[in-house]
Image (cartoon, rainbow, N blue to C red; front, side):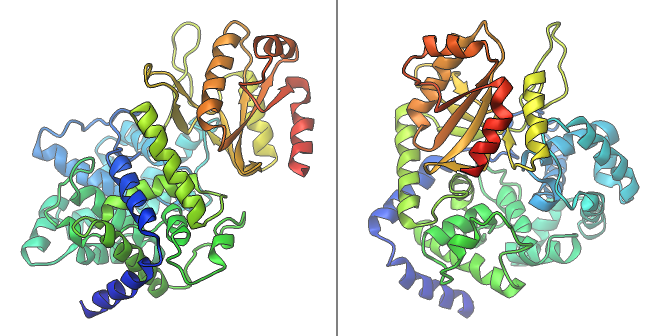
Length: 462
């Protein structure tokens, strides 16, 4: 307790250096975006949850187990893009049914993990440590069966009755679940946030929200650094390096210290609910990837998010799991790049080892037509053009060129300050597009399909 008071006192002094106007802005931003449902919890996304809505105790018990599996996989080196967690668990449930929760044999998972990656090869890749996924899942199932007697809700309630707190359950999880110790303890705190906080979280455990810590992951670490809460002057540059280390922290003690510092700061904003900042800070930290990690950059981004929310009367964007596409006779095809044109670009970027996100975000474009949105095909987070992230947008259908250029122009009107669009089209479309859009409102660069590989390689050099 004394250690916690010392941390709070130290960072109450530090936070006085953050302008009051910025703190007010942070509260406005968090209040606006804390109502957004986490990617892993969003019932509107595909694939749909089989256990929702939670009408029975059995369903709630299953949810507590499912989200511990999800939290255990929420690590870039295991699953890569966060959307892969939900997609993989859905695949495993379809193939293994209840064995998803009971199996402690890694072989039961290994075959299906490989099959999943084969099925989604045109969408995304799992992380470089994907071979450990079966062992991680088995360790979760052993914990639930042996430590929690099959019921995590009762297990947490018994801890609460003994006056124990979330940190005590986190300690148990980090000891007994594979890859949930050290800096990966943040996965256990993410799980506790999902289970303890009220809507849009699940509130299945009886612990108090005021005892939660903010799960410190790379996106939130960017916000931490941009706020000036770190004494390490090199961190803003390290966090934007293309060479990501195994961990930003030399040891668990260093990680715990930064987690407590960030939480102490969050308590100055929300004393009774510090983890309220968690998902808003994730959104903000993801937005700041490869951006200047300064208070000025932070303020600019937050003002933009708030302004767009006021204009559009809804969050400006959301993260996606998968966008399903269908062939001409209405059959759903495998997820990912679905046209030959898109597949060619997908394969080209992969062959050049270019990091990209395929249809991972959806941007709002209109207050009057909330269904009007834009999903970037290939977002290249490491490619910056005049401080803007680069989007490659291939389009090979002539019949809807007017519709597409209108949508892209609307996107650039809202978000052109932060994104650069390179529109790639069949050679014969170039003149048509120039006639449709003589002001070039729909793109920053227009490339011919026959030239895009050469153009991209030249673009890389500059």
